[in-house]
Image (cartoon, rainbow, N blue to C red; front, side):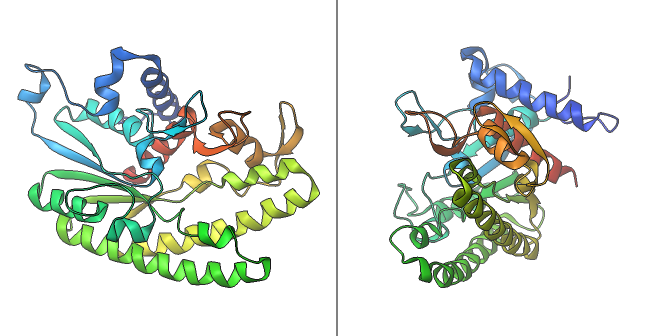
Length: 309
């Protein structure tokens, strides 16, 4: 079985394959090498196939962060880069996964550092250094960044000032994203594929708290949709593709209603965010905004779709 779907293969088959990879990565040690990107054993395909690299950049999603049994958010080997790599590696056995993502990273800290430790000083500097050292060998860069930037506008800000704060934050975030992409493109060259992503909306879970929560869910969905569109324009300006994760999670679908166990009938986007993240989970694992293993598989599928366009 080849990793990249053949031309006649259905989108449903693609979906089943990614979920199969998700389950395999979650299952145990027999698949750790493929899922972690640690390489192939000596004497196998690594000796006969040209070496290439997949560089994964971004925030906690790029590290596959999930809550453990104690409710602590920790990096895992079930993130979307791991699952995407497992698919791509089968078609390109010489491919290696390099993960530089940093939980909590913002566009600002990605440029200047301050959260995770890198010998080069920041995640961007580390990425640029790697790209320069492996010029022509990096076949794919994926990046998710920007979701953490507005956090300071949500906590400790008077309600009447949130809108203006978000506007200022969005402007700064987009400028930082342009700086990041400009440096990545310059270091990697015009031929390297760069794919960003839109974000799903964990705050949709507010719908489950009552009428006021329903209003909050609708408002935040609209803000998130606008933010995703603005980021997409920046990605496109630097010839980067965009994985439609916002759409894959049905984030704007308030019209279609389905049943959610324990809550009755809810909009499809609310049910989806509960099924594919830890945001609706009971304590101690929830509520947690990170995707679960299936959710990361959905994100990986969105990247696959973007890279085929």
